[in-house]
Image (tube, rainbow, N blue to C red; front, side):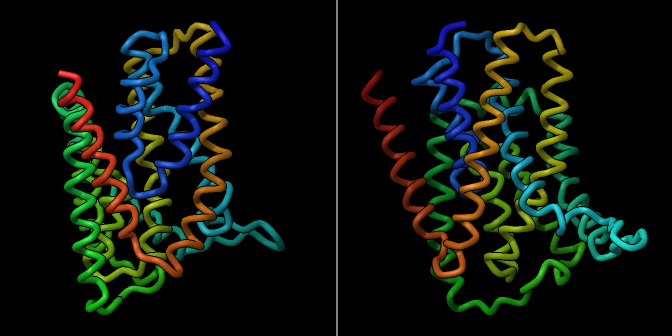
Length: 275
């Protein structure tokens, strides 16, 4: 394995760490990146790699929000935090649509939709949707300003929006759930945090599924590439999550909508000219 391959893994980790939490589609960016910077590995490994490196990003959420997501306290005497258990039940409800459809049709989606053109189209479509939604959001009253106010019905609706991202790469899992939350009146900071927490079981489940399909017979070089990308994604995610939570206190998501539109248009133009 060359040093160039490790540099590629680092670059993939940086892109994953940035795009996992911003509503711009991490899977879409990784698919596009693979068109220009390809790892010299089998297609089966790269398919697994693109998903499993997201575990590094997920661990950043676990570290940053440990007190808010761990339902037990052992300081003076053992305490069970019922509100956190309730939150996890709501997160599990939100996971149901994507989990069921993903398990049944994962290979079909990957075969027909995981390509640069589909990614570019959905980058643009969701970008437009973000701009329209945020323009209308100024007139809409926010009805939910804390995680505890999210109902099971709200959670399921958010799960439906997440399902869209599970089917169409380029949509963005975080982007879809944030749009869904904004549409039903959840504040930006609350839906952002709910999206972070929702990613934990979703990405652990998706990664486990990919690892089972690939098997555990990694070569030493493959293990190094995967671990390197995960560690980089973890460090970058810590920085990006802190940035995003500070950013959305003063700004809306329109800038990400415009970014998506521009990137999608550029990629479509590139592939049109390449033909």
